[in-house]
Image 1 (cartoon, helix red, strand yellow):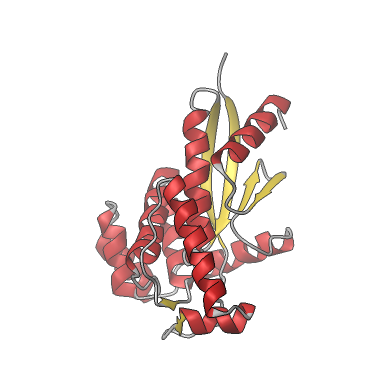
Image 2: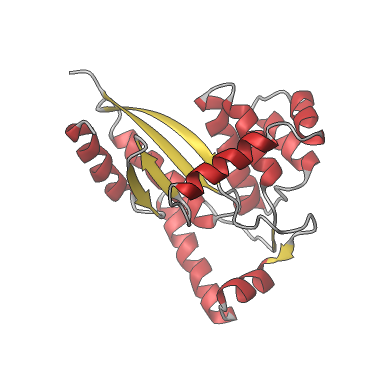
Length: 217
């Protein structure tokens, strides 16, 4: 029996820690479903900090202002994230600042024009660079180096980042997903019809994807 085909849009932001967990978890589920389901995975833009300036913001100050969290609550949340990440093979490092990610999304859009594999490789590299190494995903030199690290053309990446290529396309994609009701990430949308929200465990993704594939919806 041939594998069922599914399209998955993974709506997320580079500086979203649960997006890193969610992607690693989803991919574990996809490994379990190999041979059963043939998936086209695409990454869609969502900005957690669309108004943030290029200097970024201290992450503790940002979280306290945005969520009213206390130092103890943030410490507890980070410990939970580290544990959840470790369970699916993602290692969190220290991150002292958070940033605007619009240029990172432009670069991901460009990579996607080469196909899902190139975009997926860049997405992994960006998540690891920020969440694992604390690198700045709004710094254009950093972004070009990250693109080069996964085999993309550095000079072309620098050219994209130096101008405003794909800015309109990224904003249009952001508007589309917001209009479809996406208000938090990660949001995993299957066949443009079914939504799975958050960094779910692999078994939740596996069960949901199997059920959707079997239903043929």
